[in-house]
Amino acid sequence: MNCWQCGKENPDDATICQNCNSPLSEQTQAGPKTSKLVKRIFVATTIILLIILAVLIHGLTRPRCTARKIPCATNMAAIDKAILLYAKDHNDTFPPAENWCDILIENYNVNPKTFHCPESNAKKGQSSYAYNINVAGKKVSEVPPDVVLLFETTPDTNPAGGPELLSTENHQGDGCNISYVDQHVYFEKDPKPPYLRWTVGDVEN
Image (tube, rainbow, N blue to C red; front, side, top):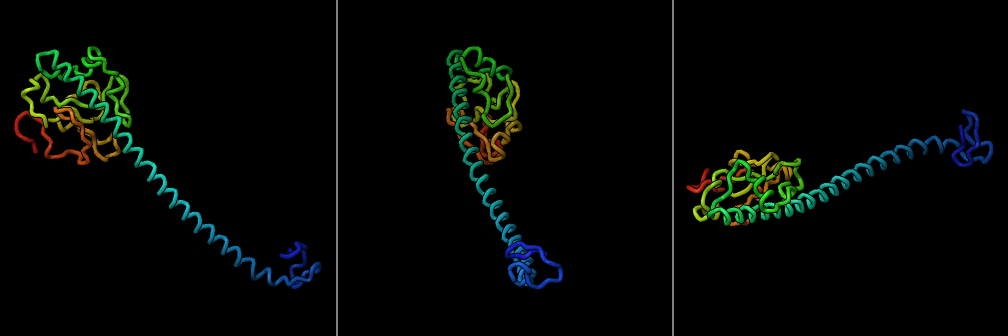
């Protein structure tokens, strides 16, 4: 048995250190208690640190996600303007749905990357934004300003359709950006808001 004061090795049955005369029994009693206390403090400290780390990670992630919504909305606003420029050049008519992305890229200098939401996994030639097929080919002047024009979707080539294509995956399920014929863009938290107007006629539920 080693002395807890001087470290001198002593016989197992010794009660007093042969080197410094310190009671070896104090070591026997204090050692295990001290060890258990240290372990408890270590466990408690580790748990507290893990909780703090989780809170920090959550706090850092949310602002990042929120910040990424802004350039996404900016992309959609730029595409909206290009669509209206097309309409101006084509007798006030919205572009066709089949190749609407290609038309804007080739004829209206829209950067292909503008079609990519920063949070999506869109690849070259794909778009994170879908075109409301219900307005394709129609006169701009005949479509109410609150009708959906573009909305976020799973990346695809020239995506066009209705609410069945709407997706919130780009923003971790928090919602998605939607642009309207009057060119305003709004982040909708409801995955599929029932009040959105998809057609020129009545509001669809």
